[in-house]
Structures are given as C-alpha cells and as structure tokens.
Length: 182
Image (tube, rainbow, N blue to C red; front, side, top):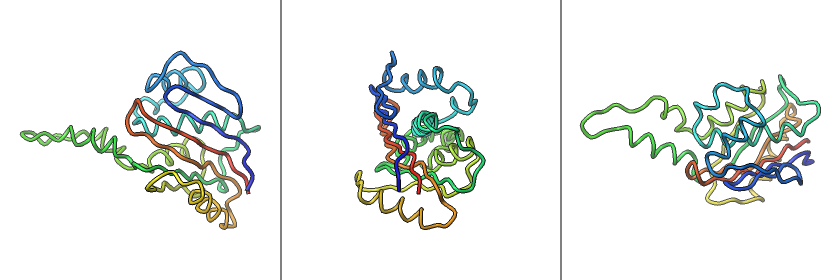
C-alpha cells in the first residue's frame, strides 16, 4: 500500500499534504467556510449532519490532491473508522422524541447511521467499490491498517480513501484521511 495524499482537519486546523491551510473560522463554521471556499457545488452539504460534513469536506480536499481526479470507478473503496459511531446524531434525534408528542425528525434520523458519510462520498464521486465504517474502542493505527489491507485483498480494489473520522458534536471533531493505492 502506498499513501498518495493525506488530509487532517480539527476544529482549528486544516492540513492538506504538508501544507497548512488558513481559514478564519473554527468548529462547525470552519467546515462551512471550507465548503464555500473549496467545494461549493454539492447541494446536499447543508442537509448533512456534522459527521457527514466532516467526511465530505475532508474527502474533497483529499481528492483535490489527485491528478486527474478519479471518478466513476469500481476499484476505489471508502473505509472509515471512529469510536463514537453516530452518537452525536443519535442524541439529537432523541431530543426530537417528545414525552407528550411523538414527532421525531426524519431529517435527523437519516444520519443516525455512521456509514451515511461513506455513501455520500461514493455517490458524489460515483465509486462502486467497498464502503465501510468501523467503530473501534479507540484510534488504533495497527487495526485500521490491517482492515484496509484486507480490503486490498479483493482483486477489484486498487485504491481507497481511508482513515479516522471522529465527530463528538459539531464543534469537536477530527478527520485524518488518506488516499491509498495498492
């Protein structure tokens, strides 16, 4: 496996490759600012939950390093890991279930599965390979590497967007994604 590109995003830092990108905002506003300045053409962005926004923005910056950008392919996997799954969205969904009135929000419910973010990235880029989201007790580079290596055992998989994608709420998050080739 060979790492072709790397992106790190935290509430106050954005690193693409070895370059630190400077933005005025932090936290949830940072993701919106990155979207407006670097992406800006995906209408579903503002419907996404914080985890999906984080993964989407990180993948867009990561794929911006690829020349030419690879789309419409069966040989690219999307494999993410975190420790909290979609717990932040689960808590928001729970708030919409009132004691006196059971009117949960379907808009929030859509994002109560962590693998929604892998699907958003696959749909955006027309990737038809494996999409997986693993929940680990803690960030474990060795375990993550082993799982990604297993994905490359598939004779079709030639590359992957893979890495850590943790979002405890809209203000606290970490993405460390890699573009990896077989």
